[in-house]
Amino acid sequence: MDQKSEEIKNRQQAIEKEHEEKQRKADETLHKLVEDIDNHPDDYRTYYDLCSFLVQLHNYTQAEELMMKALGLFADRSKKAKETLTYGLGNVYYAAGEYDKAIQQFNSLSDGDMKTDAYIMLAQSYMAKEDYKKAVVFALTAQGFRRQDPEINYLLASSLLALGNFKESAEFYDKVLAAKPNDGKANFDRGIVAMVLEEDFSTYFDKAKSNDPKYFEKGQKRLADIEKFIQVKNKK
Figure 1 (tube, rainbow, N blue to C red):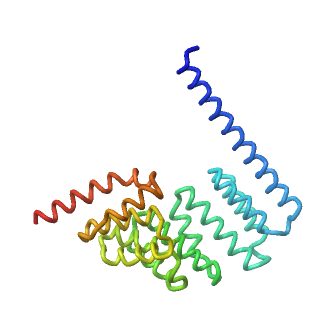
Figure 2 (cartoon, helix red, strand yellow; figure 1 turned 30 degrees about the horizontal axis):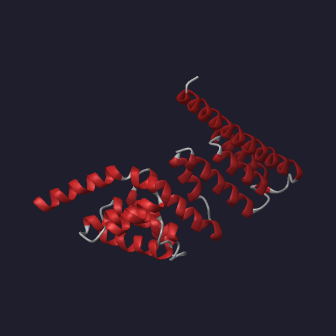
């Protein structure tokens, strides 16, 4: 076997070993979470934790079934349990790309603590559906409760950017960067806004490239589209 073939074989073995280790850890975690339900059958949080892990594993069908079962067991016992599990079911649908079902669950929440989180998820769901006007409405509502939250401000900025409201978008990206100056995604998106507004954008892209190279690379098509947009705008 030549050296190149040996290197390929070693790389494949290393990948297989890494995959086996990840699978072993996932199996251990799954076993522990199932055991928690068996040991604490009256604690709705054990169902929520297992459901969250199933979502991480992209096992959406089992996660949905588990949440439905948990709601059947706990919905009439406690409002907190019902709200938490409903939010969990909404997250399952969101992760599975079933945004209308997710929206239905998040809209049904009434508890104050969960409601702000629900507004955030509603904004994200409408963004995923490319209904940016509704995304802005729910993100603004959430922002009313958590004005400095970078996650909410990023949602707002991104929705406004998609709507072409560049100046307003810049304001919210600036809020994100005030809290998280090295956030790669926020720096890249703020750089795009700066290009459109004819501001200096190089610093934003430099930070994006060093802090989130994958997002920077993925955004190259967007950069090209913006450059074309600016060229057309300047010709007018």
